[in-house]
Length: 372
Image (cartoon, rainbow, N blue to C red; front, side, top):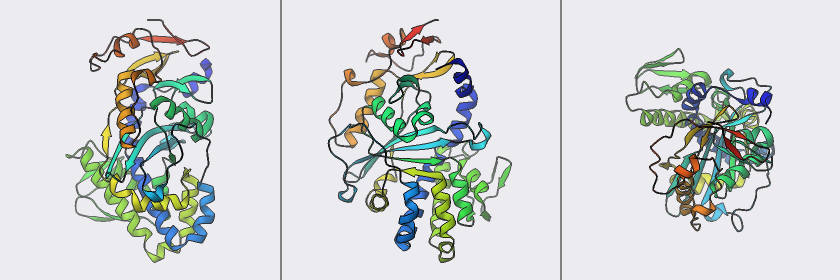
């Protein structure tokens, strides 16, 4: 990638991390809300929803990482790549720039065992961009080839088949709440976020902006992430309750318009209904997997390195939940970073120990050359 392109795509690490903390779990809320709303509308207004869903549905060509396809009507284990798109969200960057997959999470769901596992994939992992012929940050893949390139790049990185994807514009939650006419929320605590105050025990009718702020706050909640998840569930329940209201159904065309603008998936409408009916119980309390990564710079851009042992742990955990054969270290498609690979790729290495900062340059073949 040329230096001008690097400057366009690059951001300071501190600012990126701040924005990621705000968004990472917010969009899981969006995903669950969208499934609920589409299913409610789909059951009551199947004909119109089916017609509008053609704009949401996006078939992609995936590289084959498993034999055959998953049958959701039979409750077979499934993997879904959840992508939150940075498309000018919050004035982070210009809306004229191509969207990037700012948040990526892989969820495996096994309804037979009642288990689900989810892992957040750091967007700055330096890896092969499948279909583009380059090695770069993973989140560049969506800007180059949208969902197809991102799905194939994630499959290559993890060694795990991605059966379906759901891509959601990060501004989607706000627009969805506005489309259903706002939601009634009772805050479980008093706090202020993004200059918006919330009072404990007071019922408030919230528009999309306030609902998004209510769902995002974490640091002022004494329960931390648990408290935030509880507030996200409150918003989800409020959206679904409102979606069931007959008056809201009168506005279903506006709701569908919002979904068409903010969502892309290769789940068909009937598959989405199967997912809601057969898989949501297993999704309620997912086991969270943590990917261990290390900082480095490549061509003066802040990137992240993942070792073979760390990647193998994540890959096999996801594969076990899918009922697939486990892989070995030799199967892992990590990049070779001199010195870092020699140190971290040893299974006995304690990855909590950080090496001094290391910088690299890449050649035309994607090989990394250490410069400090």
